[in-house]
Image (cartoon, rainbow, N blue to C red; front, side, top):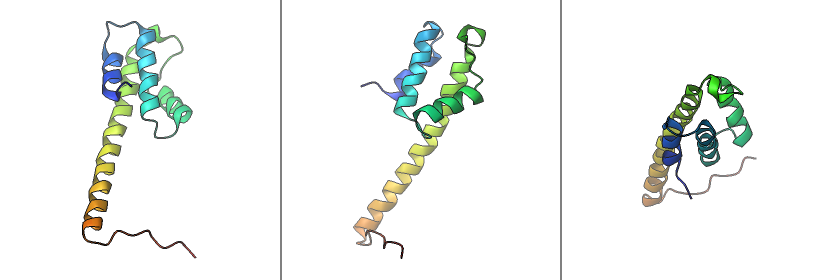
Length: 102
Protein backbone atom coordinates (compact mmCIF):
# COMPACT_ATOMS: atom_id res chain seq x y z
CA UNK A 1 0.00 0.00 0.00
CA UNK A 2 1.29 3.42 -0.88
CA UNK A 3 0.74 6.63 1.03
CA UNK A 4 -0.87 9.85 -0.08
CA UNK A 5 2.23 11.88 0.82
CA UNK A 6 4.57 9.55 -1.09
CA UNK A 7 2.42 9.82 -4.21
CA UNK A 8 2.16 13.59 -3.75
CA UNK A 9 5.97 13.72 -3.76
CA UNK A 10 5.98 11.80 -7.07
CA UNK A 11 3.63 14.37 -8.59
CA UNK A 12 6.00 17.15 -7.49
CA UNK A 13 9.09 15.34 -8.82
CA UNK A 14 9.81 17.03 -12.17
CA UNK A 15 12.44 14.36 -12.97
CA UNK A 16 9.73 11.72 -13.42
CA UNK A 17 7.93 11.29 -16.75
CA UNK A 18 4.60 13.10 -16.98
CA UNK A 19 2.70 9.84 -17.32
CA UNK A 20 4.14 8.60 -14.02
CA UNK A 21 3.34 11.90 -12.33
CA UNK A 22 -0.23 11.74 -13.67
CA UNK A 23 -0.54 8.19 -12.40
CA UNK A 24 0.64 9.36 -8.97
CA UNK A 25 -2.07 12.05 -8.99
CA UNK A 26 -4.69 9.42 -9.79
CA UNK A 27 -3.38 7.28 -6.93
CA UNK A 28 -3.71 10.28 -4.59
CA UNK A 29 -7.32 10.58 -5.70
CA UNK A 30 -7.97 6.90 -4.95
CA UNK A 31 -6.60 7.49 -1.45
CA UNK A 32 -8.62 10.66 -0.83
CA UNK A 33 -11.66 11.41 -2.96
CA UNK A 34 -13.98 13.77 -1.07
CA UNK A 35 -16.57 13.83 -3.88
CA UNK A 36 -16.07 10.26 -5.01
CA UNK A 37 -13.43 9.09 -7.46
CA UNK A 38 -14.78 10.39 -10.76
CA UNK A 39 -16.25 13.61 -9.40
CA UNK A 40 -13.03 14.48 -7.56
CA UNK A 41 -10.94 13.82 -10.68
CA UNK A 42 -13.33 15.90 -12.77
CA UNK A 43 -13.25 18.76 -10.26
CA UNK A 44 -9.44 18.77 -10.16
CA UNK A 45 -9.23 18.57 -13.94
CA UNK A 46 -11.32 21.72 -14.21
CA UNK A 47 -9.94 23.69 -11.26
CA UNK A 48 -6.27 23.00 -12.09
CA UNK A 49 -6.94 23.23 -15.85
CA UNK A 50 -5.23 19.91 -16.60
CA UNK A 51 -4.84 19.75 -20.39
CA UNK A 52 -5.35 16.58 -22.43
CA UNK A 53 -1.72 16.85 -23.51
CA UNK A 54 0.16 17.07 -20.22
CA UNK A 55 3.22 18.48 -21.97
CA UNK A 56 1.26 21.70 -22.57
CA UNK A 57 1.12 22.48 -18.83
CA UNK A 58 2.99 20.06 -16.55
CA UNK A 59 2.46 22.37 -13.57
CA UNK A 60 -1.27 21.60 -13.73
CA UNK A 61 -0.58 18.29 -12.00
CA UNK A 62 1.12 20.10 -9.13
CA UNK A 63 -1.79 22.54 -8.83
CA UNK A 64 -4.24 19.64 -8.71
CA UNK A 65 -2.37 17.61 -6.11
CA UNK A 66 -1.81 20.70 -3.96
CA UNK A 67 -5.53 21.47 -3.98
CA UNK A 68 -6.30 17.87 -3.05
CA UNK A 69 -3.66 17.97 -0.30
CA UNK A 70 -5.13 21.15 1.19
CA UNK A 71 -8.58 19.54 1.28
CA UNK A 72 -7.11 16.42 2.89
CA UNK A 73 -5.37 18.46 5.59
CA UNK A 74 -8.64 20.22 6.46
CA UNK A 75 -10.51 16.92 6.48
CA UNK A 76 -7.92 15.30 8.77
CA UNK A 77 -8.11 18.21 11.23
CA UNK A 78 -11.90 17.97 11.37
CA UNK A 79 -11.79 14.19 11.69
CA UNK A 80 -9.34 14.43 14.60
CA UNK A 81 -11.47 17.09 16.31
CA UNK A 82 -14.53 14.87 15.93
CA UNK A 83 -12.66 11.83 17.28
CA UNK A 84 -11.41 13.82 20.28
CA UNK A 85 -14.94 15.05 20.95
CA UNK A 86 -16.33 11.52 20.77
CA UNK A 87 -13.62 10.20 23.11
CA UNK A 88 -14.41 12.97 25.62
CA UNK A 89 -18.11 12.08 25.44
CA UNK A 90 -17.30 8.43 26.02
CA UNK A 91 -15.13 9.22 29.05
CA UNK A 92 -17.93 11.37 30.46
CA UNK A 93 -20.47 8.59 29.88
CA UNK A 94 -22.49 10.74 27.47
CA UNK A 95 -21.72 8.88 24.30
CA UNK A 96 -24.90 7.36 22.98
CA UNK A 97 -26.58 6.70 19.70
CA UNK A 98 -28.78 9.69 18.82
CA UNK A 99 -32.51 9.16 18.84
CA UNK A 100 -33.95 8.44 15.40
CA UNK A 101 -36.05 11.15 13.84
CA UNK A 102 -39.81 10.70 14.23
